[in-house]
Image 1 (cartoon, one colour):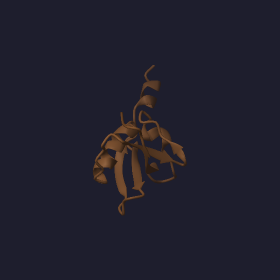
Image 2 (cartoon, rainbow, N blue to C red; image 1 turned 180 degrees about the horizontal axis):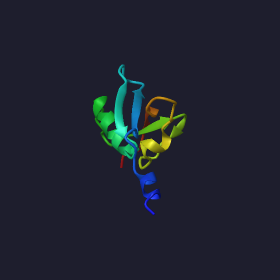
Image 3 (tube, rainbow, N blue to C red; image 1 turned 60 degrees about the horizontal axis):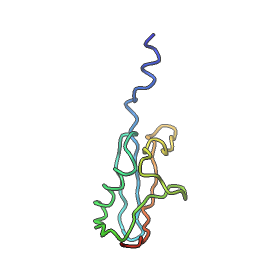
Image 4 (cartoon, one colour; image 1 turned 90 degrees about the vertical axis):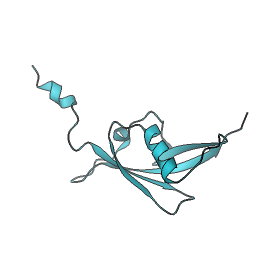
Length: 101
């Protein structure tokens, strides 16, 4: 019975539109990712987009709906599926100073 095998396969419309904002930036990041992409991957791309150079004293992370997102979480896991359009997520890039060694 191979009927159920297809249920696990990604549909053609499993792209997630990621919107990311950063308080210190005037522009917004908008990119499409596969739903299996991790937050860590998006974070790296967003840091490049906003031209952020990490010096080791600042931790960067995403907040979605007030909740910090784990880097290993996939964008598909937190995407909002609206009627008639691609799922999307809105992420806020936040910073936290970490004590250097």
